[in-house]
Length: 188
Image (cartoon, rainbow, N blue to C red; front, side):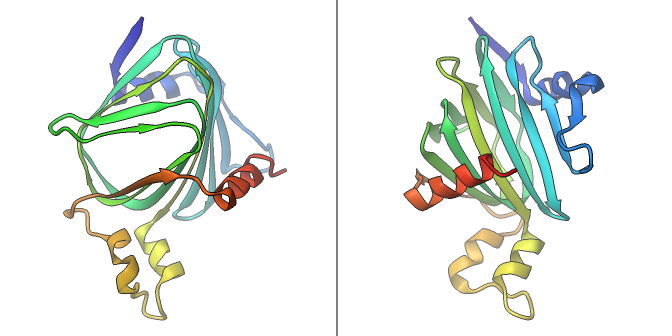
């Protein structure tokens, strides 16, 4: 069986039950763990705000049924790097033939611009474990730019305006990337 819902309704369900929200580390108010809604599966999403404009999301869950989520068009003012450790998902644009499958050992980099309406499907065949790291364009420019926060031409595509087309890149994680992902997962 497949469950099909809108992204907004999914997040309403995900965040409606405050008791399932808890601080992962009681001394850190910026490290929050949400239990996955039991009607969809088991597991959690852990969101860590590392500093203003920089965050980390660790998703670790197993679904009961295949889940299809309809995502509306939206804007993004961030550079986001997703790493799939296990499980698979597929995303397709609603109005085009653009389609991507993300499986274990793959990464997906996206930055800024308008994100198209999409339909995402998450498989139930194995547990889903993924890490997402994101930072605002402003913070990215402070790291990657010069003293005036001007980014080199080789990185300009990562700091595009909200009105520009979304930059995306997908590939296989390298051994160095895999080592960093494992360090993040095992960080005390």
